[in-house]
Length: 170
Image (cartoon, rainbow, N blue to C red; front, side, top):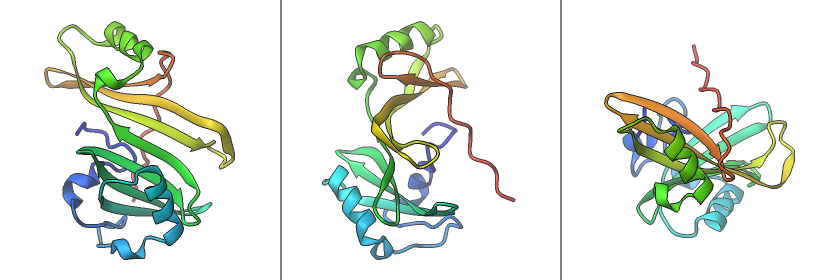
């Protein structure tokens, strides 16, 4: 895993086999609302749910289910009514579209390697409105020596701004 979690993905390492609430307290998977569980299974019918996080937002409670799908990390972020906000799936660099790989070749430093690659889909705009089609992009962690570089690349190969890191809670 890279140093920067993707929507809390680093929690999976500490929570394999157990669901976790924001404070780190166990959250039984049985408490996952049925609409959220149905949304998760509709997107990823195979693969166990290994962790569940939730966050109370102005728009209501958001659940983040982490899964293992064919040995790869995946996640689904959904509202308690089952409306999917975002999904992600770890994949190999070679599974990305050719324009993404070309951008990686241009942007990777000499001797660099792809440490982590996630295909992300945003299903809702930041204001909560549904998108006509999911916004697909790839978040990639490049490693070289002890350093890392993070890239976000659209499917057409264009670089996009990186999402802001989550605010530290006091």
